[in-house]
Length: 294
Image (cartoon, rainbow, N blue to C red; front, side):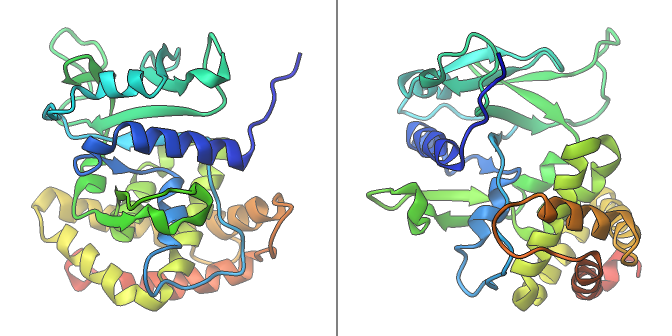
């Protein structure tokens, strides 16, 4: 029996359930992944693209390595109270959360991942990979490199402005600023494959279009990242070089992937590889500061 593919509305419902359940922690965590560009569309003064919004069926919740316990209770308890049950994924062996309405013994089609920055070596003293970190009592998160960036200078947005969520009151959510979002996507590009890699490149295009009118603000964020430390300056340089290579011309991997991703969408206008290369090329020329070594 084939597995049913979830709908956008079902994903939004679970996102609403998640944000409501962990509301006391929304000032400590950052919502990353594909939902950040979706929320950018509600940012004041942002461009209105003709292409449809991209989205995903998993929610990346980025938490600091040590998450203080809120008076409302541990996050694991709030998740349980919101009917989000833990499941153990296989590759890698990490804990995910999914709403009990899916009635899935294994991984549901819509789920939550807890992520935290990987710092230092990728293996512990015994030589075992550092897949997980206990960030709070009863809560572990998958350790991934470069997530420090997403916790740096995030944007706070009132997602009550997102009509599809049908929230009855204001709800403030933090998402990565566009500079750190782009940089993190660039730095992990080589670790991604297939559909995930193609969709990441489409997200990069989406962010470039959305923030085209506010590219000066993106450049200031990028300048701040480069000035944070010597290591982060190297990340900016590396990320810049990756992005410029991926979107160097219409035949490069980036524009080709963007065209392919939007061609597969039934709604909205298609995006040509040539148009993607032009837009992102101009955007990147304005984003990267002199401090990146250009």
